[in-house]
Image 1 (cartoon, one colour):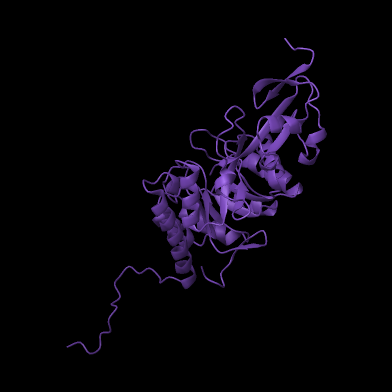
Image 2: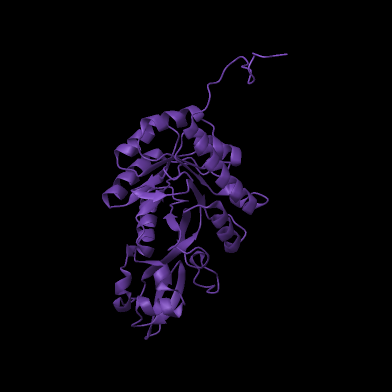
Length: 258
Length: 72
């Protein structure tokens, strides 16, 4: 992307502002291809039991090398602080990961986060030395609170996880950007490249996308579309867009008209 | 049902009969699980992977072996 515009999370610089999830793909092979095309340097992963009866099952690590791409363990599916903490402590044990994505859900239907449990968990994790990227609601005061308790990035939802509804509350996202200093990454709800570009145009520092790529009819093409959209939206944001006017303003000079 | 030289443990929610004197490391080897790619919880406490070769399994132990899978 821009050479002088690095994306920094917890003191590490990244070139790509797109983070992708690795769930919902048809196969690990398709997932690995999509990740490569997307240009993402960070991927989210889930922690689950090893299948001890079917030993021939392939492992994610065989397709996405954690030495080449940063694994961001998440707590998807956790509904309490204690479940989330247990999951991330285990994740850290697998390979020393300190950068994690915290997600404590509060409602099975909307998958909205339980922010009381989330804030509680963030405090504990920060104390234990984790660098916590926090999935959260799009409430500016909650975002500020998370920054105050030591989160490494704020990741508000655009709309419910997997919904593809795009950014429902653009005003709140702009207010959050204005209130916090740590990276703001839109997580969940992105449906297409337009949504991804819009998130960047609003001033977000990055976008996290899973379903919109994995469940597109052609995931590999969508992976590229998202890569370009994030780059495009970022450049557009940095370039300083024109003011919106109610009336027209001619692009060609008036003088010299024949 | 437990035979004299066997103990019953619960691994990832499934009951297994293993030899008495089995270590956690031996269990992983038997299940063909690469220890580098997993984390292990024994009776709800995470165990240090550098110590699994000398951690003996006891009757009724509950062990959880987890790894990374695709997720958002």
